[in-house]
Image 1 (cartoon, rainbow, N blue to C red):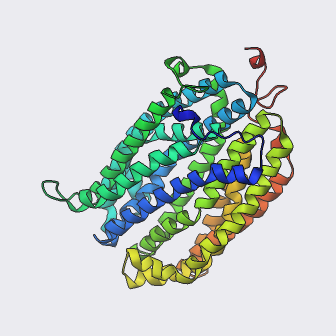
Image 2: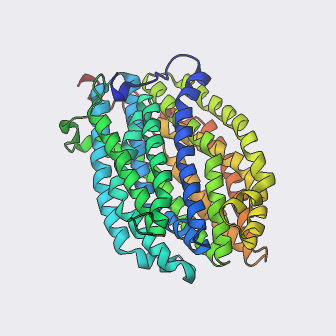
Length: 468
């Protein structure tokens, strides 16, 4: 069986819950694998001191602003491929996939170069703790240099998801994450003739493994065979397809970039409380990302299901997919979040045995854990909007969550209200809760049903495409 047809699911028929789970669990596994690597990375860097742990915490918020553009435009590939698959237009699906790869390959080169050059200015703007500036700069430059080697895997993952195949990307991620976990301590601390590289070693390991994943992913796209396979012809610039990718992907890119910039500003506020608060947030973010695996998986599965169903003209089934995904994520998250609420400080001790970090972590987990439910629901709703191609709500809700709610509340509660770091966590809680309510209300209006990715008599095919 060809790589791109392996475990490919038709989401337009059959039991909805079963198919959502079949498509979601490999995405959950990938997210868990990546988060486990981040936890292992934090564990080893924590052995060098909290200053080393601050380096990836500060750096990744900035780097993800650039990565958000790639992830957003890559998600447009998922939408287009899933809707074209639902309509049975494999030729258009291949064209959409090729144009997404072309666009993200170019974007990775540009953003990686700019980020590498302006790393010192970015660290200054972030108010990075003085005891962590040097190591954060080294880490950030390594990661920016690796952006062109990272973006192609986003394309492979997005196209595969749109086709209904999440098992292939999971297998690639499994191999590269295991490589990462094994190589990480070797590059950080050195072994034999290999010198100790510290934080640079952690970043270099990540870069190498991302390159490996992208190489395998692109090879699979071109070796697809069967009904879907990229070719050199599909990489030739196609104006209309690129316009569609931008129309769908830019709102998500702006959403994620705005979110990342918000987190970057938030990091500046957290940094003002010292490296103990920054380290606590670094550990907390990793644990929360681990808990978000079910939401990420069901969101991507729902995006593929909604896209395929709208492409096939099955609007009612697209809506039932989202409702089922929301119910499932609530059930799954309950046993995941209970340990976080009660044992947050114990979890933090695993990574940094620092009394100040543990004290801050204890309160942070108690306040923020309930909001994981709220953002889990938001994430699944975003998948529904993405699958339809109506991505404006994703941009509006995400940007409002950070810039209208979280940042003002975090600052006001932590500074003028004198709640200190507790004010930061209450800002996080409130912003997620309000966004969940607003997202549910917007989705219930049904506007997404009429605003699928492309115009014309079909939700998928633009004028003229039906006869091509």
